[in-house]
Amino acid sequence: MEQVPAALTARLVDQLYHEAMDLAEETRSYFDSMGQEERRLLAPMARVVFSCESLKITTRLMHAISWLLVQKAVAAGEMTPEDANRSDRRLGLANSGVPIGQDERLAMLPEAARALVARSEDLFERACRLEQQVGQPEADVDSPARALISRLEAAF
Image (cartoon, rainbow, N blue to C red; front, side, top):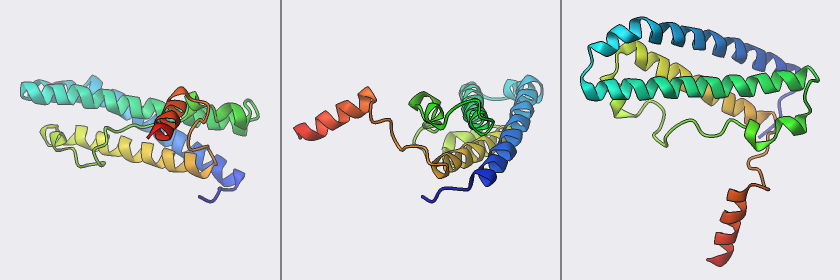
């Protein structure tokens, strides 16, 4: 994938960061007020799904915000690109393997909650694409998991 010029990347990171912070505030507001009221009206299984999805939304947003803050630190000269590329600073996976928007359990949720799920998934996917474009490595070659996979591939 082609790398994006640094000035453009800094603007994209800044815009995405502000969008993520706005969405995090909107999410907090929803789950603190209207979301609690809507949750009370749901069937027991739907309440479990609601709780799980609220955690997923928060996790996606916090991972994206954390990664974006690292990118801002690199742009400000507060962190080296090598330090930013460490595996513990990567975005990782944020979904359960179910294609975005196709989890049938989401139909049990109120419209506002479904909208927050979709928006957080979209934001996270855009952050992942940006991560790829800024030249992050695909995998940490020194990771124990990578070494185990290599050994298994060699054995079979």
